[in-house]
Image (tube, rainbow, N blue to C red):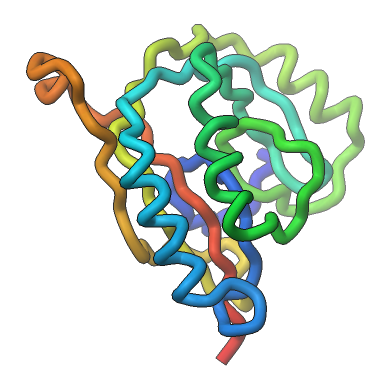
Length: 175
């Protein structure tokens, strides 16, 4: 009822938005450094929990809990190499789409409160995905730039499915 149709992004958690993907803002060299840093950090798979519905001014989202603190650790590694494009207070979340119009806040809040859902727990994260999107397509899909598989310490863990991918957003300038 509130969401703009045509949102094409796969569910993701942005760890750090690095801005435009070009030599001035976020170069291929910085991407390579972040990639190497994550690989050398030998990060093991970790679990996240989805919690309540909430909203930013332009988009509703599902709050994400990170009991192990893994997202903040990964975020620190990434932002040591490249400062975040918009370093506002970090909020772990999965965006559900963008609002199709301006709505009365109380109307949206009432709808969220009426929505009954069971919390989703133990979403296993087994890879990190570096992604980009075209700035002219605000609801357009991501393009995968690189993937980093997380290291399994227990052979049994190899059999567990990946239930969520983390995506680091890189914005590419319009052509």
